[in-house]
Each structure stands twice: as C-alpha cells, then as structure tokens.
Image 1: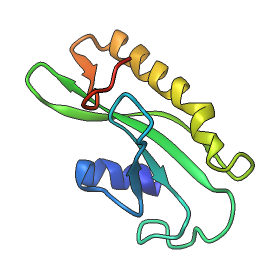
Image 2 (image 1 turned 180 degrees about the vertical axis):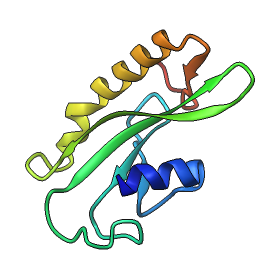
Image 3 (image 1 turned 90 degrees about the vertical axis):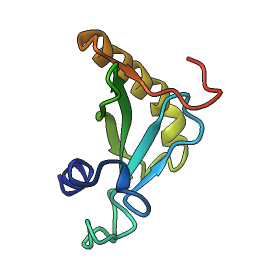
Length: 113
C-alpha cells in the first residue's frame, strides 16, 4: 500500500528506485518496486520481490491518471515475470479504458498495440 500511496502522491514524479518504466511495453507502462529497500519501503530487504505494473491513461482534455493493472511476486520467475505479465497488464488497461470511454492508454513513441 505504501507504493500505491506514493504513486497517488507523486504521480509522474515518482521515479527510481520506487518506479521504473517497462521498456518492452507498447503503452506507457511502469513498475512499482518493493525491493530493494527504498525510502517508501525501507523494510523491504527480503522476499517477496513485489512488482506492480501500472499504466498512464489520458482523457481528451489531457488529464492523466495511473491505472494499476497487475501485481505479483517475481521471486520465482525473476525478470521473466515481466514477459509473463506484460500482455495481461496491457489487456487490463484496455478493459479499463473500455469501461471508462473518456480515457485512452498513453502509447509510447513508436509503440503499437
């Protein structure tokens, strides 16, 4: 919850080490990181190695919000966790936007979906 609260408070200003972009995503997808320990999660020095994927969406007036899409423990899969969850996260963002038709995912430059 500390990471979600930090995302709510800082938005795009939240950066490393708490959040980093997912470079292989087509959308403006980012990952909240529980480990290694950070100022937000100073106690996070052992598993689980939580990751929470979120995406920025934008409405026609330019307002952006972050949509939390998927989270989990990457202890077992390591970095393969991203490959296993990237499509699921982008699909969930698409579903969210279908239920909230005023918003569309922010697509990275050159990204297609």
